[in-house]
Length: 185
Image (tube, rainbow, N blue to C red; front, side, top):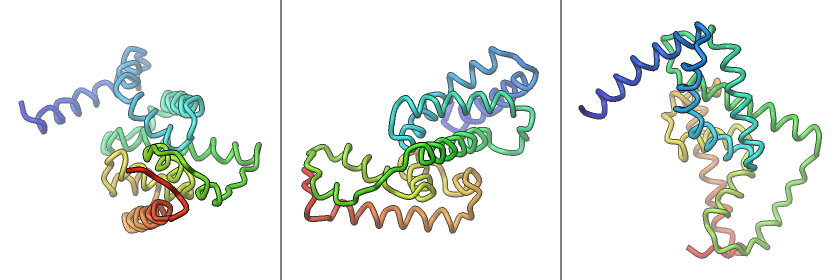
């Protein structure tokens, strides 16, 4: 069985699982949770920056899915629908966080950043991107989601997604090329 046949088989199976969810089958919800919990957590962690906040976002996403599953239209890709819920949840939590605790971003922090671990530095730099730009970059460059799906998730045009990814890469290159930052490759 080739990769496309496996994908098509999962799609047929997933459609039935979603129909079962719409009929309040808890085991079907568990199957959706088992399939998507880790990819959603991985994405949420990139947005939220902290494990606990990311876990909260994922849990809230599944609660919202439970409440809205009857609104899912089978013409749409389910993973796009689910990631859209997650991204909106992350944006809501980030807005709430800003209202509760103002964040002062000090770009001078980069000049004293001495960690030799490039991964940690990149994660820190990505977290400093504006929300939409970060969303486009993480979904495209990190998660590998096609730009047309990202456009659906974020309610943007494909051109808007491309622009945000381009600008994110430009900013990240700028952070990496800052001579005051010592990064060992």
